[in-house]
Length: 228
Image 1: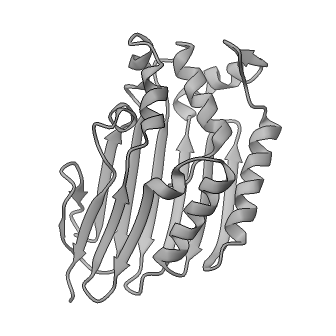
Image 2 (image 1 turned 90 degrees about the vertical axis):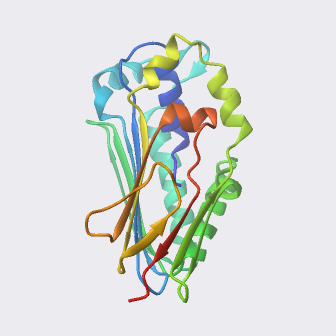
Image 3 (image 1 turned 45 degrees about the horizontal axis):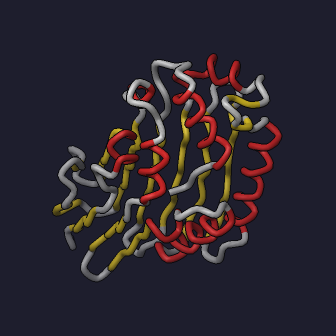
């Protein structure tokens, strides 16, 4: 899962300051080929509150927390892109920062799921987060089994617990969504909240950010494909 440190800080500020009635969406879109190669696009979308975000970014700090500037966000994004381009097995790197609607996107191709994991670990090390250790993908082409392991971070629970009960309502319209598309049809998947598409070639998982932050739900899943 890709994240931008400064945008994440903005999300926390927005919700804690009670400035909004809606928050953000994070979407991870993966296309996986039968041989384990594929592409990924990650989108962090704050457009539901773009006007308030723009007003917030005009300030230097809120409640003692420094607000990242556009230049800081651009700098961190460029650091991430450099890491991505230098990761073996990663290619066709593209990104866009839309400061009118406050939408950030990053996409790339990966030669194998292992390359995707190496990228996540590199980002986790760079941004000093548990990103690389808490999330991992695996794919067995012979059995057609795609697995995502995920361990909830206690730090995330602590940060969420610091937000008052009143302010937590501002997370109600925030969601984390994952879409995984395959060349073959899906035989089964194990996540209670995930859904298989009508074409049977994609799995959609949409979780409330509040449940993910508190550890009530997990991103872990095992998807089995049909061999034919």
